[in-house]
Length: 444
Image (cartoon, rainbow, N blue to C red; front, side, top):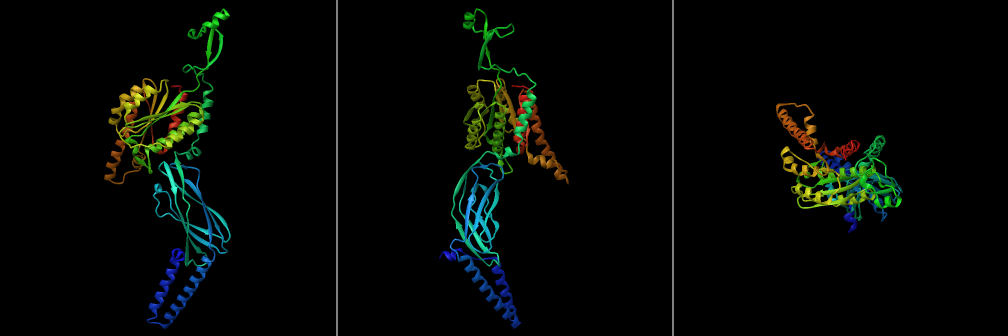
């Protein structure tokens, strides 16, 4: 029974059968054509028999192993390795079908592999996930044909279910020059004397000198020494930087099969790495219609893994975001002046005005940078010349939508709030550049 389930005639065999039928039809007029059809049908039967014996002579014709990476990078091409071994002494042509994860929505995927006799071969293919979560590969089906004529195919099923997680994009670090940008900032920062804030890290007790802050006089040490002594503290070298991610309805808009929320998550991961590389403290805040959650800012590098795991498990129902709840949460949780980089999206000036009072209130206690998105498809559309009257009207409407972004930016700047407009695929690099620009200007 297994033989009949795995035995297939290929398209080559049916082409030869079609030729035989054509010759048999011609035999109604020419006897030679009928005889030629009989000979061809006999040769086809013989060839099918020989190839069947070759393909089924070994119980284990080929070996197969799928090698998955430890995790997938969201929004990036990920390489999957297939290791195939030929146990027979004939060259094989293989068609490989994979039960790919349902999130990829690839129903007719297949690949061709030419495998020499007694050879081991590794072949690769790429998948591009666009959603975070668990991706499960199921069975692999291989149709084996001989390299002679390929009239018969033997189907072999490899049952190998395996699952891996798709995390926020880490492949982007191979493309982003984060180290170079951080090093340039560090080199430029050497010529500045930073006097921002007052650290609570005690360094030493020293003699009081005119001009020192008298509030730091250590009266007990002064009484023992008989002269004024001063507590000296370490200079504050790092600030608290929080990436704030809006998980509301406005972040559901898709670009290149990814939502703005996923772009914001990928940008937040890249920004977190840049923050830690500059020795600042990185933290995370997420907010939606009902809840706010956060990870307190820390400077140790294991913070990157903590934030990455939090973003991997981030789920939302994409309801309207509550900026008032964000303001109350920030006032209650974050006591020290910090830089809040808010990833959100405003589709019109009216949507900004509904929440401007809360952004202004937050900006009274923290430095706020609002990062919002420009529609890359509209930008691409209006950049091309119009060919008819209909396109002229369409491009005019498109430019009106783009001008709304500039009005939003002006409103933010007028209210003392930093703003950044970026296209989704350029978010990471633009956000890091803006952060370094803020650091250079010593705005916090």
